[in-house]
Length: 483
Image (cartoon, rainbow, N blue to C red; front, top):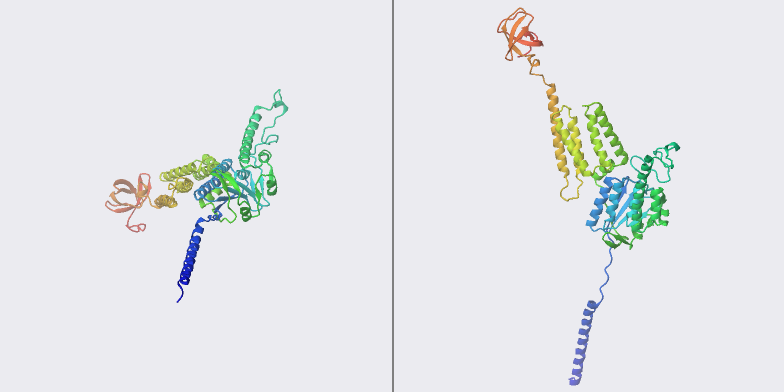
């Protein structure tokens, strides 16, 4: 047997080893709790890609405003706006810039692909964007405001439209006549307003304000590389991938405060304009709008020269309303309402005027076009459903064609009333005579003329009407076919 001292020593060793294991397990359990939490990995934000190609008009402005609002609601990380535009309408440009300045989501404007441009209104939009970038072989500038009716002369430049003033037309002080002063003052007001506007955008984004003024006053333009050197834009990037990698980590000031861009590995969701915006973009193309305006004006003139022609007047009225919308003289909602009222009026007039369907067809076209324009609403749940528009348009077109068909069928039918309705009727001889005597037909007594004497009670057929005399023949004649 082992001595007691040895046995107690072994027990003490076992107890010490067990305590050491318990202490080690306790340390391992407590250590992770006291460790500093690891910094979460910053994930790249999702972006939305938009396109601004072609002339800028009400349709493109509505598209950008709608998508920027959707991006803010979806809490997107940024919006990439691809630009290739020759310019456009001033009011549409200002609507886009207002939406960019008020956007809580950073807007990265990128003039692409190579060969694209951001001229005129596009230059203003670049200056307003949080980040302005261009692809190689692109250009911007030529931001002088030009009226639809012609180009205003800038200070120090000649203008062919300005009336010439000779020495005899000047006053004693050598000043030009008041008409020339008024025209020059109006041009100066437009240019100075544009200069102040673009300088304000440049100062807000920290870009070259002096060159921006030169782009307005002198129509100056720059290539992408020159724009980057002159601090007109932020950078030149070969592709979208290179652009997103280069601006990653950049801090920009938005309407909701400063934000740091996380774009290096960001995914892009492309949102193209819907079908309605594409149709409106075609209509609001300046060339198309001008043609529509001309068709509208000349259509109304032709209708005035030949009242009742209907086709030129209806065509002109529809084209003129659409052209007014394109030039932004009428907002979308009012243009749609005007077209709808015009369509209802034309379809109503079809029931009272024998236009062979021209009024009704023009009314259906005007009504459908107005309904599409009227869908522009920012209140959810109040948009006009396409199925409802199609149903009402189909019903209206069906009613119109039914009226036209009934009218055409009535034109083909034999007249059964009045004097024409007597021809072919069967009559009875009530009084004989050498030249035919008198007959009773349709409840009336008529003088009749026949090729032979007739006897009372004999059945005859009416062949023609000659004044107050009816030409008749016996029903047994070879001309009588059936009763």
